[in-house]
Length: 146
Image (cartoon, rainbow, N blue to C red; front, side, top):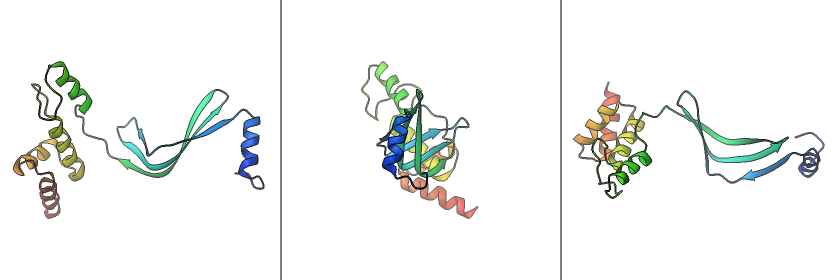
């Protein structure tokens, strides 16, 4: 802000200059960077500013950076394959070469929480008979012992 000018006067001056701004309600903002990592802003304050035909988003809030996610088939892509095969889209349906959606998500969750490879996550889930909490705890425990 400019000292000595209140927000109402500032809005009036911006309007005279042809600058429009509006608040955008958002719960979360995710920026996917070219290196594959993501910036995540929880409970953001987002403002859409339009000036000289150019639109800009201003985002403020609590930022965190997420590691590059493992390359996997997106759930929506798997669902499309299931639909094309003529089967239902429940998590238990299967298409040759595509894991059920719940298993894909479980493996990714174990990988994300423990930092292990896909193979290690799959083995831990298999050893724990699909129990996510047990698989994660065992892998975290093993990591502390190393």
